[in-house]
Image (cartoon, rainbow, N blue to C red; front, side, top):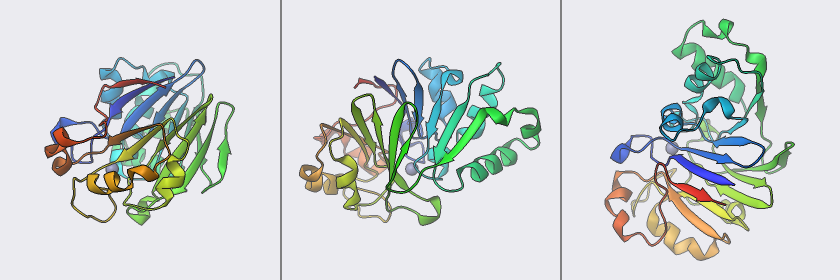
Amino acid sequence: MKLTIIGAGDAFGSEGNMNTCFHLENEDIRILLDCGVTSLVGLKKNQLEPAHLDFILISHLHGDHFGGLPFLLLDLFRGNRTKTLTIIGPKGIEKKTLALLELLYPGVQTDLDLRLILFKEYPTNQLLETDYFKLQAFPVIHSAPSLPHGLKLFIDDKIIAFSGDTEWTDTLIDLSKAADLFICECNFYEKESKGHLNYKTIIRKQEEFKCKHLLLSHLGEDALAHQDHFKIPIAKDGMEISI
Ligand SMILES: [Zn+2]
């Protein structure tokens, strides 16, 4: 499988980095993990064709994680799409996405064949099974109305875990357990802030993550200013990882 980091930035475009979006492909399917506002631009910058996407998984309902969906949907329907795109997210994902689409492009929904978009809500802590992978969503601690979740993807014989946005919670230990790759947010360097993690906490807790590889993402200005001293790899826009 190949993972391409489309965006590993925070919500504020710090250092010019794109919003959260990871592209995963194996022989059968192509999946996006989160779809922040800049995702369509990021996919094209990496020569990845949005029309080839089969699934989009959303960790929570904040713009830098799901706000790119309207642009992506518009782009998909410019071509002659015939295959289904399945969007899997927290409770209300369909209503929120269509409301956002209507807000940004009023009336456009009547021109789109939305039957090709299948929305699914993931159950909390239980496995959601598709023909191609299994997904487990773990509630994490971030702005509660955004319905924040960490996501654990079981695909082929690999496990990819993603924290979404969260402050420290022991849930991260379960989430990262046995993962081949655990992508963990690291918004701050040492500042304690509600809803986000900092590097010092991750270093302190690192031994508790039972994952093969840890990759940090979602670095804000404060964390980026210290990145040269980081002892854990940092996800960068455009990076490709073979899993
Ligand atoms: Zn975020």
